[in-house]
Image (cartoon, rainbow, N blue to C red; front, side):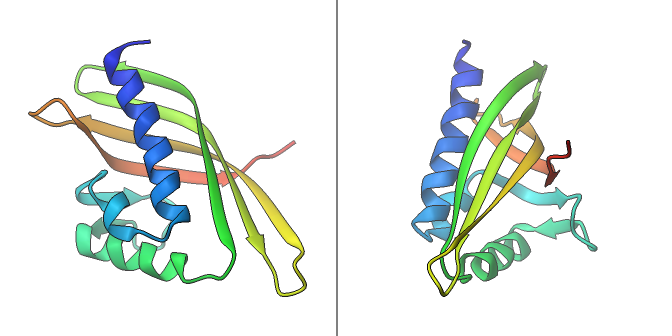
Length: 127
């Protein structure tokens, strides 16, 4: 595994930890100044809009993520990360509702060698 691949895998783990601890500041440094979320009606978001989006999502009671990057393809200063996100939400009767998604993110290498996610999409896994 290359240093870049390890960085991107660590980024997914740190994102999961930040999301599950409701620390929006912790996850926002993974994003560029603009982010394209293909799933949204208005997909292009500024960093502030992305922060507001996650603040709203994290307010949902009992929601947790498990992020598993399955494949990383690096081409120059772009990386394509494909993986699985298991979203669970504990509902009022303590029942857990799981939702398994497949995701694809595109990250860009920054001048300092780190990576920031600039595009992403996810959707339910289909049989």
